[in-house]
Amino acid sequence: IDRYFAIVRPLSAFYRQYKRRLISGLLVVATILVLATAAPSFFLTGVYQDETTFCDFTGATSSVSYYLVLNTFALYIIPVLLICISYGRVIFYMKNYVRPGEWQSRGDH
Image (cartoon, one colour):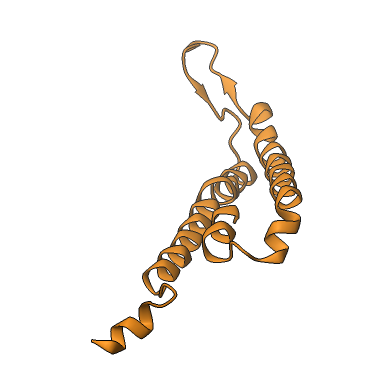
């Protein structure tokens, strides 16, 4: 989000005024979400007694499977999609950007 504002709306009053708060708030929210969704994994994983070099979800039930699928979406797939959308918007903006004075100079030729 910060890169989007820095490239697409660098002179935005909102961006200039709330940049530090925005970044700090997003970092706090991201940290809380990651800790809240990843913490149960510590309690769900275990080590097989006869195979101590292999960790696995030893008591995997259907609810644990649902948690793992939702965790994968929350921690990997959704953030990657948001990053791709943000960068796509930045690329679209940069591709269609007309520098000041460039449009008039094209018409003169």
